[in-house]
Image 1 (cartoon, rainbow, N blue to C red):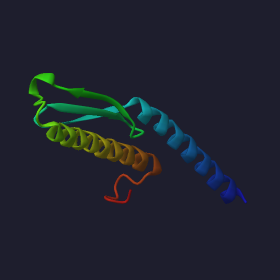
Image 2: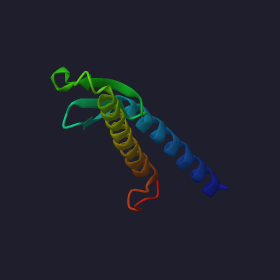
Image 3: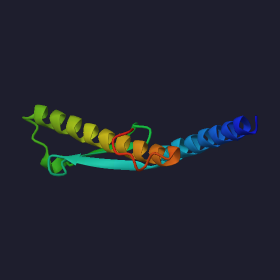
Length: 103
């Protein structure tokens, strides 16, 4: 019975640690640029787009399709980096940091 209580306490601590990391991730941001810096997208650790910057001097009004492609590339790159950051932080909490590709 003592082992069960210990296990439940460990699980509760893990849940608390994971909740804390999720809150911290919401405050962390990563950015990714596309088109040589023409478009910069910033997302938080919850994979929410929080900012996008477009260099107006680099925009060709005749080629909006290229701008759209750069926006998509910047946002997807930032989301990928944010997800990787979140997975790494959660793996640390779960004690899985030494197992590559687990999360």
